[in-house]
Image 1 (cartoon, rainbow, N blue to C red):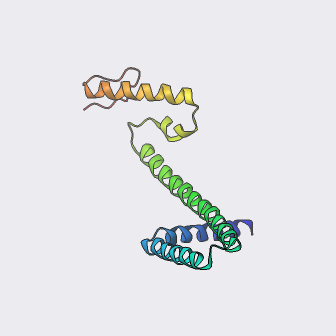
Image 2 (image 1 turned 90 degrees about the vertical axis):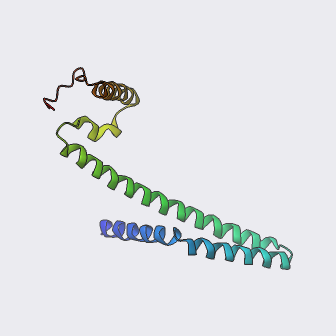
Image 3 (image 1 turned 45 degrees about the vertical axis):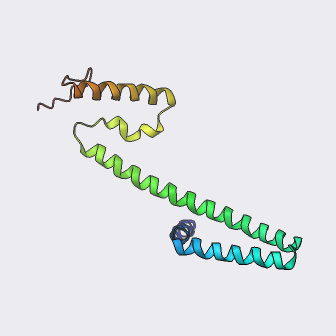
Length: 137
């Protein structure tokens, strides 16, 4: 049951993200805001209305924040899986890079320098030091 609720919530957040990313949604929200501001001006800016609007807008912002974050995490995971599959399918690729996002900062820095050195040596026509992949071209 817990999994079914998570799947439903995920679909709701995905759908919400689709809706809020349309230009028509932004235009509609802009029109509503302008109408609300004009109405407030004609009514003398009653504090009760301002407080209600503030409460509603804060709730909407928090909801949208979670929807966008959920969608970004989902898209990033999907992209990461695709990249991992490309790395695994390339014989000359370094399989360590599949899980590189889990490495600590020091290790990332070391790998970055190793990769730069490897690619510079490949560009200059040399074999990378310590990385003999057995590929003859």
